[in-house]
Image (tube, rainbow, N blue to C red; front, side):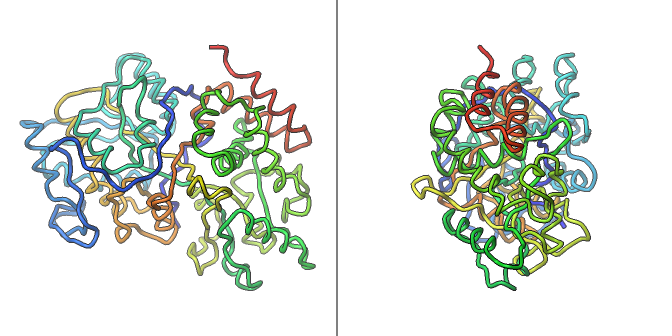
Length: 477
């Protein structure tokens, strides 16, 4: 059982925001402005390259990546690059296997250090002038904090060219601070999912809703069923981070109802929480979360959402007591008993439907960013390698719980139905990706007042009081 996009870094760190706001729709890969970056290939083709396990044929890969490194960063054999990250255990082993062909090509050794205390320690290391060569930074706000230490170096042009070519432009903005591009995307996860039991749906003849209205109609139908099983279950309890899952619901609705431009303005507080678009979105969330006919299936009343742990909130689905729960892909690791996660299995997920079709298919995303503290040639070469479609495919084959939003990632190289679902969502031509808004806002708001006030809201506080209190926490400068 694996989660698409790897481990969650949600609710572990509070860092200030500061990356440039995104405002672009997913597009097909554009032509590179430079001749040194990797050229795209057809997904139907097959070219010889070196895979993570040795020589082999990898469909869709470009076999020029090694030549590109040698022509741009010569004489790096025998050097080493240090990598610091929060990714540990089996996922880390998969990552290390994914870049063995980089070492084969260059003779550069990659030294890996995974640390559960990464978010705190990476700042300490930067401030003390002793950072690793590269860090995999999971939040744009944390990237801004590191850039402010003066120790992060800009990414080379070859990396920027690859990002322009292979990613939704929104991703590039999250690696850009004060108009300087620092960090290419690495892994990705997808938050815009609704978990459900395919077997429960099949038994009742329910089908996957394709629009928000269809999802509400399905919720009404389930709520009216005399068997008494409610449509939704949820939980926001998460220790000191209680409330973060409520922010995800609000963010998803803002994107679908008000659109990406308003979402970006909300992140920067040009649109306030108490303004009409956000107030309307909270009311929409409340029409589900505060509807006693809808929640909290198998757990309790509406207020039980505040005390139910987010990690166990989906348990009623496995017990046949709940039909749906909105949660990110990484929730897959929280199911018990090793269920089959597939469209005809015990548990699966579907894309949280759209509200207003003019905004395409909004996708709330998370992920890491490859951040360098050195511009030595071997470090730049490794940055370039990690930005190629070749490595994106290696990652999904070697670290099978991980995916990328790199559009050069071929679905045939993605392992598991859930991972394929996530990649399909990310690569949809109508997809519009936005990073978690609370991770982009100042810590006093996104991981402070918003968590606290939405927790009070679910236990009875009214909408206007909730939104005004969050606005009041916004820093004056």
